[in-house]
Length: 112
Image 1: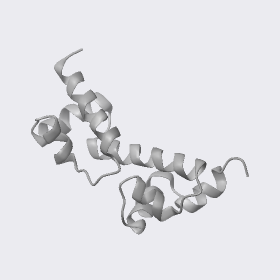
Image 2 (image 1 turned 90 degrees about the vertical axis):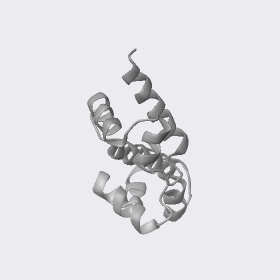
Image 3 (image 1 turned 120 degrees about the horizontal axis):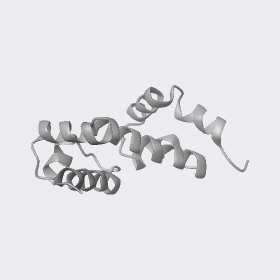
Image 4 (image 1 turned 135 degrees about the vertical axis):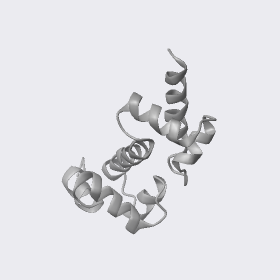
């Protein structure tokens, strides 16, 4: 692969290992030793979304797993995916899925 592929792999693995922490696009770019705007451009070209969008969708995917597979509270799940503020978590979740985390859980919970 190219150097670009290497950076994208580095960036996505950084996100997968740190999504529960308060990380920003600056942090991801810095981890790759890249300028933020250059990083944002190559990431979007390679992945089809901005680093910020990728980070949010990764966090939300993890949140849906926790909603489905655990009995953790909405606040605890938000916290586990990098949103210490439950309101911010619910708002971000709703902007991706169109419903609240609580509704999503009610509609998708397995093994009741």
